[in-house]
Length: 165
Image (cartoon, rainbow, N blue to C red; front, side, top):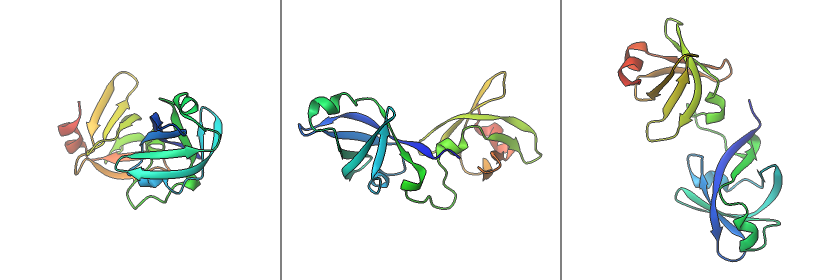
């Protein structure tokens, strides 16, 4: 599994002292609080402070001293090492770990491979079977098992057909 994960996107500078407002791509912006080092476009930054408010966080980074420096980071993705993030609760997975998983029925028939997951109240999975793209909502009863080590997601085929496009 990939050691570096995308955890946020820089939205804009905040104030005149180089602080940046970011949209967390984790369950909560407070998940960013323990992170001490990040990477933006391959450049490492030490995190001086993090304030979490709702789904947003405000970061102060060493080397980003003013609004002009912060403006250069607008729209960029923030990456962090997996070991710097809080442990996930049972049954929760990083999207990066789901990409590339084979989606199979309970009878082991392959439906496709996960190419994207759109976070929402009910996550939307996008699959490719080589010929077409399939999307489905991870509604109750659709996914019966996820094994990220084996790169395999098992679905209830009847329920999958009800929610897939």
